[in-house]
Image (tube, rainbow, N blue to C red; front, side, top):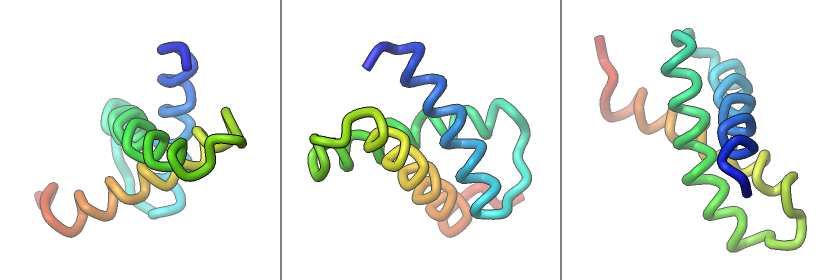
Length: 79
C-alpha cells in the first residue's frame, strides 16, 4: 500500500475510531491514533483476510485504532 494511501486510511480510521469510542482528541492525536491503529490493525487483518484488499485495510485500521484508544484509556493517557 503506498504511503499516502496508508496515511489517508489512517486519518479516516482515527476519525471513525475516536467517534465510535466517544473520545475528544485534537487533530494530531486523532491522526496518530489512526495511523498507528492502521499499522496494528492492518497487519493483523491482512494475515486473516488477505482476499479483501483495501477494505480489509480500512476495517483493520478502524479496529486497530479502537484497540489503541482502549489501551490508551486503560493504561495511560490520564490527565
